[in-house]
Length: 235
Image (cartoon, rainbow, N blue to C red; front, side):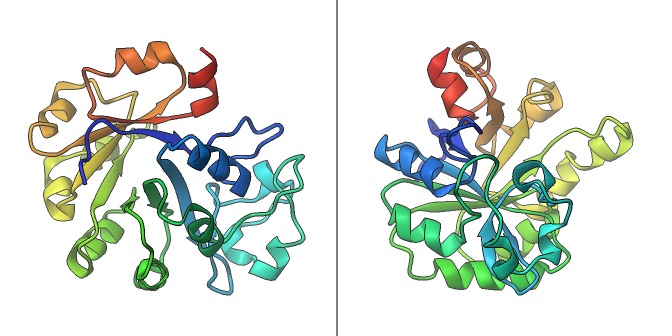
């Protein structure tokens, strides 16, 4: 599987009006257009793998509660924004996509590293299609690299409140510790010489592209692109 030349629909194809991010409809639209899909995975209180980005349900579901403190049954009483769709399980998404397009799966930050990795590996064990795994959390990336043969990436961003922490979380020492197959970089820092140096040895993704102009701008700085696909499509 090549990690270069990919244009990936970030959380599916959505507008967060008629179609919500990380919803089955958003993923179905990407599948129909044969576009690779990025999605987010985390565990509920009763250890169900669901596809949802935020740690808190407020923005997408209107309830101020952490997803990890909520059972899957409780999630079924909620809908995404103004749509009638519910937070899908990873299993539902896998059954929908059925290997037709590449999946780029982000594992959200958690203290239950071994548990979520174990459940994720089991869920994907017989999946017929190609997929990537990635996380901001270095110990998740390192754990997956040690326990699977799946291509695994490290997400890197900037932390405005701490320049030292930002540097450490994008340092060569951290990259050597994780040994990722690819790196996914926030577009705010991808142009830095220090960051670009990593690209010589490791394929680099950039996120999140929002229009065609940005896509052209970052083509010289990345190998693959995570796009909020509707704005990109419309501009």
